[in-house]
Amino acid sequence: MGTALSTTDFLFAGQTGLYHGKVRDVYSIGEDRLLMIATDRISAFDVILPKPVPYKGQVLNQIAAYFLEETKHIVPNWLRAIPDPNVSAGVKATPLKIEMVIRGVLAGHAWRVYNSGQRDLCGITMPEGMRQYDAFPEPIITPSTKADVGHDEDIAEADILQRKLATPEQWQQLTDYTRKLFARGQEMAAARGLILADTKYEFGVYQDQIILIDEVHTPDSSRYLIAGQTGDEPRQLSKEFVREWLMERGFKGQAGQTVPDLSDEFIEQVSARYIELYEYLTGLTFQKSEAPDISNRIQTNVEYYLKTAA
Image 1 (cartoon, rainbow, N blue to C red):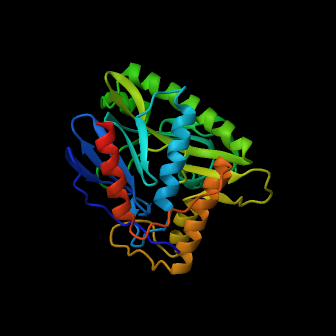
Image 2 (cartoon, one colour):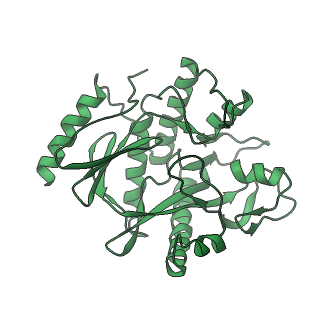
């Protein structure tokens, strides 16, 4: 296994801010530029797990860049350059505090809600008689609030408008973008023998225009199933297997719970899954960046980018 990037604490020229997210460290440069550094941290149930996963950050960064390029004709996005395998650079938007979750298949959180006997999710009534991994008659949008700390929460359209998290016009635009992006993601997944079961999108406002921000169609934000499988438990190429591994050991991210010990063998499995998904989605062979010091490599590449892009 290669080395892993747990965290960063750079001081770049023109830096005006630094935010450590669950996975990405976000650097503000001047008034309207951002650097997103994808670390190898991994989170589940909104908890950052104690061990990083080698190459995970590189995989996420490169998949996100791939899909941002492939969907920019549908919705404008924040990305402008990839100065390093783990780094994306782009414009700084004002985030809309809604995660636009869209589901084509009954799985994950939606299945757990459904299996508990509930049929309402974010104001959407799910059909009776569905089984886990059944496709919805048409994809459903089940938004959540974008929490600064703690857990995100499901929210219905009426509550979004009542709390003024978006205007009616913005909400209409968000739902339109979400459906078009998901349709494109499903199309691209199908071409690679996969099913895009569900995903989430984040949007912001830049120069009075709604744009797509953060990552898109990565295994951290999406659930992929391998198409054409039989049986009740199709193989997933997503982070859900990490959540299931934790739940099997009694961990659901609740207060007072301790994260189970993550063995080196399990971390290797997670890393291999991320690399496998990259190759599935893109049809390319993943090129591991074998720099002995990832932080030094990032600093050198980003400093060069900032000098040449200024």
